[in-house]
Length: 206
Image 1 (cartoon, rainbow, N blue to C red):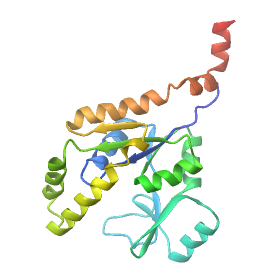
Image 2: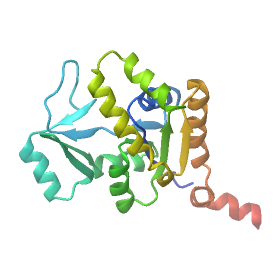
Image 3: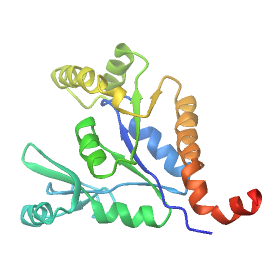
Image 4: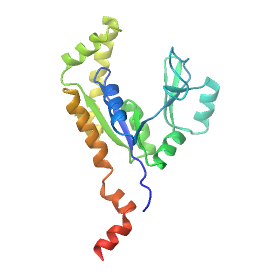
């Protein structure tokens, strides 16, 4: 039996939709799923570890990786660079692990150009008012920042049609059940089963 290759998932959502809480719960429930760890040139924050939250590198090293075409996608955000390493992703996929890229719609487009098999999942809030309540409830942002996040959210959500799956995070447990189902279903796609169980299928049809 051929070892099954993992699936690459793109997970996107506006800030406050609950994306991080959902994928963290999925990681706890499904040992076959991993979250991609990005490279960044920003300094580690208190409690962050190299290789866990990010791979922390200097600017010269990051630019060398860009020159070597080492990233699936990369972007400059203010004074810092962020990027998703191809090799790190491919290593996990080859181990049969499903990998989540937590990126925005622009990064998703870059990834699809290089890896069309990537499966997109977009998380939507149940309403704009619920989204604003969640952002306000964090207690970490000013009214100005929240207003800016809300404006950006509408722009981000307009790209939901570019994704294969859309989950509305109204009830968390229901949304988590749907997310688990998406991952489980994609492990039983006909093309994958034909590849890893070819002998069985030949025997059954002979």
